[in-house]
Length: 331
Image (cartoon, rainbow, N blue to C red; front, side, top):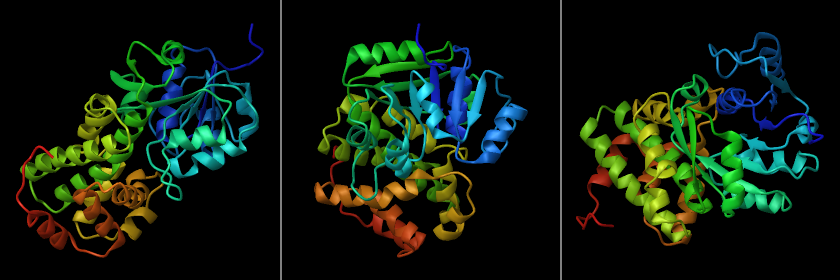
């Protein structure tokens, strides 16, 4: 019998972390979630709802919230759901535990160009590491709607065990040994979703959006393969699947950010007005730096960076993309 109190813990009390806690409460008797915001902790514990980040979703009484990160060592498995740029600091502050860390953040660390899994291995070398990624809107997951995700681990035995611990009838993980591919799909699609939002906000039409998704996927493939990802992973749930979802709905934080840019608003005003993080805004410049260093062409990502920095207008960016040399579609 384990001495630990909680079969699973969630580190990160935003919408996605709360949704994962709701899923875990379907199959485990006790779930502990850590949130930085005292208001979120109070709301989950007393109202059984995260009114700050996932309002309107009723949560099981099996879910307990805490603002004390040290309490998370009482969990047998930990899902890390803090924003990508905060993962290093969060893991460094976490007291010693041997629990497997399932990384749910999608992004690339700005200062180092490291994937989140590399950050975790560097910061917590003694913990087993997995990556969870795929097409997931938090409110649908929390409502129990059918969802499929990629769970990537280098060790298949670990992956099989973790799948059994997190799978529910409506939440289905598929194992992959391609940790890099699962991470790159989730990071790049956030930037491409901003671009699709720009297309929508600027009224450029559905033809343009479909073309951007297809050409954006080509950029994802070029970059992913250059960093060692497998093509089949990028064409799966964590790559193409997540790309299609986030590029086609205003429920995507990145899409809605892009929509505002397409309507002529500044990135500063749009980002200042958000409680939740649009990861693509932070990933875009570091992704472009990394791609440049690898000699990988990513014109759509470059265009998003120009819009976010305010160095170009939507009209100028569109004109530049349309003026690119005619070439083979294959690459």
